[in-house]
Image 1 (cartoon, rainbow, N blue to C red):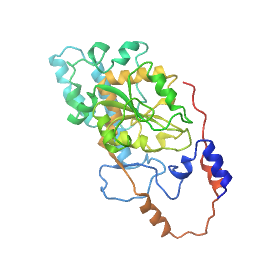
Image 2 (image 1 turned 135 degrees about the vertical axis):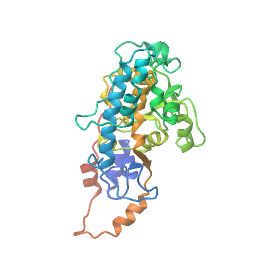
Image 3 (image 1 turned 30 degrees about the vertical axis):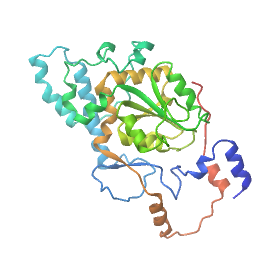
Length: 340
């Protein structure tokens, strides 16, 4: 290996990509997490997926289910605010929408549009403290009747967003995005870049459990914006039931089901992103749309050495020699950060 290549990579602040091997094109190590169907065996060691399979039975069931979910939300939004015999008579129809869908055509809806400029800065910072005062769904609507107790508890968490980090400043300038969001919403910050601490290692599992008990969203901001670079910052909040707000160079839709994450890069500004998070915090059914994937998949933590062992036993038609220069130039493309 060329020493100059390693030195150059380290000076650019991107040495991580050589040592952590999160790249989905790596033949040796899996990405740090994976989603597998709930029906799969807990001890299964299937091959990793470089791309999310949109043709398998689980995804097709999920797509069909989400079409019905969107219809159910629309029906809830159009119901009278006061209870009546007429509104109660529609409960069975709503239950059908949320339980399953007969629709097989059309594409699932994208993210809900935030409610314009309805919320000001004060509303945003106190977004989850008084939902009804901010135009949230009224309690006379039986939205809670169509969700599990676990889902209701997750939608009822009182804090909006959390962020843990140990490196700052970073190539992605993620700390700038966090600061921009804090102008509009309250963000709990933990680690060397934050105000709070969690044990000896803020990345420990119990730190995520602690945050997940009270926070709706987790800011899954990577320290560099590189192709397919994804770390535990994405998989930990997914595992613990927070909705990840992602900011990185990966094509997240390639390996995650739609609706399971929120991509910060899709918003015009930090203010627009903050307003959308507030909107979801004030509307439980819209928020829970981002957690419905949990009815179909679970997070798996693959063992890289099992994959390595499997690769060593596979027959190769011809040996291949990959230099560090060719691997780096062909797989690692990084991008300049957005000015938030």
